[in-house]
Image (cartoon, rainbow, N blue to C red):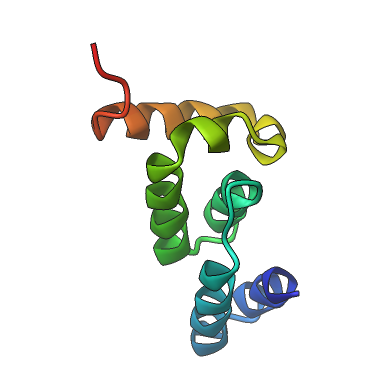
Length: 93
């Protein structure tokens, strides 16, 4: 429900409400929803939430990438995610 409210807050440019929704969403992050929340954060220009989801995903990389949520991400989002992860050293030689 907080994600739906975030969408509305973003539409109506309610920065305070948007920030509060992001805080609530962060408390409910899991391996299963991290990737989809990451995609939503990008879509709704929630940079703080995007960074939080990305860092969570880095710490749980294998499980997140194997999750259903990751499989439903847009191709461009997946490419950018992989590139950012590589920059952070997620893939070691």
